[in-house]
Length: 502
Image 1 (cartoon, rainbow, N blue to C red):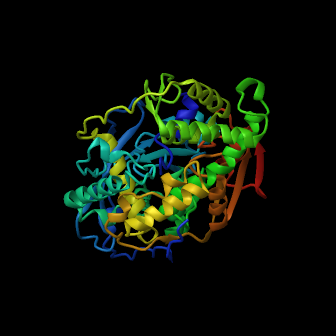
Image 2 (tube, rainbow, N blue to C red):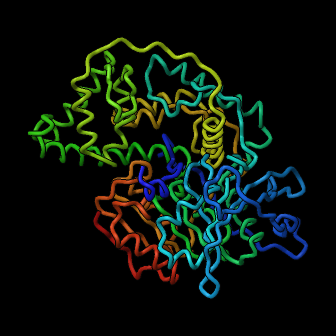
Image 3 (tube, rainbow, N blue to C red):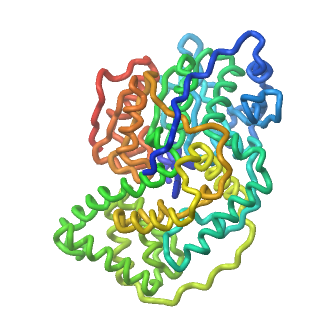
């Protein structure tokens, strides 16, 4: 993966990760009184040291404490690891630029890759700050003792396997409850945003600038809602819909893939002499779903490496899951993969691999991912498994590429309720929102929803853009990158929304 692309996509995306939530409006957090019980957190003085397991030699790390529950600051605490890359030049330095690469569940301790895509004129104005959010990486990580088979989410809906999927979802939640019930309700975006304000204070800053990608856009938006007066220059790249976070985040992926798939059928139909799927979008679509039906009846033995199938039996569900993002990122590679799959011979299903404990870092990611997705907006997740069965059947028919995946049951059906209601984002804090047209993880409609929620924002849309992530990606047009750089340097948002062409 090219360096610039990797910098923007490190662990990013709501990986696969609209029921209307009963969200309540969140008022801004009150300023602390002189005798605030939170002073012992805000007044910490971090001891900086060389970071462990990080290549960037100039990056320094420190540990700070934050309360598990901000309403009970004298109660249990969490360890949070933060990092700082000093790049600000005296006389030019604006402050700190806090970063988050996405998730939820991803660590963000090493932000140094971001500086590789930033011009010096931006780096001169900020110290770049990263952190592992509560529950992940070096910040009091959540560990539920999960097995490899329990990490496989989301899952395709199949009548024959729904009972087993429900059992795995129940087991996943039960293991996390058994090991860490006291912490689960407080592993939320709202509390992570409060942790960000502790970071601001311990760094001695009155306000912080912020650059967040994917889930990081929601985290940034929640910070602006809770701490509007402490939000400086805010860049949100590839946004989730902030007022449908939870189950709606997943279902938006299935909604967003359908127009991209229609665009793919048009592109392939124009090149029928190359791909031989048909010379109309309808014929291409029919040929694709004929392949899916064939692979679901009898798996295909695929030996290509493009889809990471590694010479194994491939079902129609495997194809849909793997190609979902390819329709966005690289439509012609997706077409070549379909050509190869159509030539693949039938085979018997592979035997079920032996289960066992999952890799600790992968298990930590998955556990925290669901902890936040489930607890942030508990009201968006039905408790009755029959509701998931009904919705998966409905959305599989309505959104045939991915609807049965995103509406199927997950561990959230059995997760403890979060400590607070969902955050309603609705404010006038200034922000710059970046959005590609064909983003597979956070569709264009989600970026537009973020723009509406942050009424002081400007939207930069990349027409024809296909990546998950805009800033610093090699294919991003200069006008989008320039808009970010100008804003971070001068603080001036564009006078109006901008459309760039990839």
